[in-house]
Image 1 (cartoon, rainbow, N blue to C red):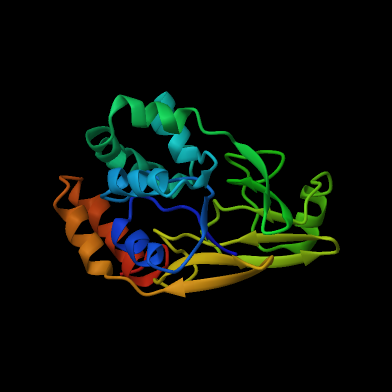
Image 2: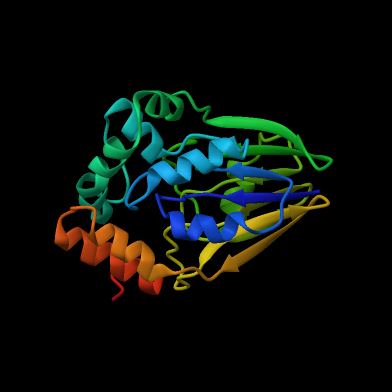
Length: 233
């Protein structure tokens, strides 16, 4: 069995469209379908049609409950500048769907007990924890699973902590690790692996430019999309 694992899609349909073409039997999405990107509607509709197992991200909650996304300070203005895109593209039922998503799910996938959440066990929406084995050992101490799947940081990593593996697929729609390719993961026959896929970045930039978003925000986001680095471009 091959399971596609994506996170932090952020309305980047050209990226998701490429990754969606990877052969798979099931899909897991670790949140943040909306925010920043120009086509959250297409992304959400594909994920729902695919029967994806989805947990809520902080941007999903922000849209559904009309609250701040509580992202890092230098991204707050970008989240605010692009928030209207999802409101224009999603209907009331779709926004309610995002609001009703669970913040944690436990599934049996490919013979493994798998826990899904967006950020950290203690703070599933907002906790920020990168690829630090010792901090994750402490953070995941109470997690009873073979595999813990997380997102939020936009940084891909795979940690083996005794009987528990922690996997962050990175961001499909807005990588921040210096590699502009879409990041995702595959769980195949119970074995996780990190993957990257090239996609037409300029198509995303063009659609962002056509969205009517503040040109300063568009320029900042375009630089990040093209370089995979904060402040890039």
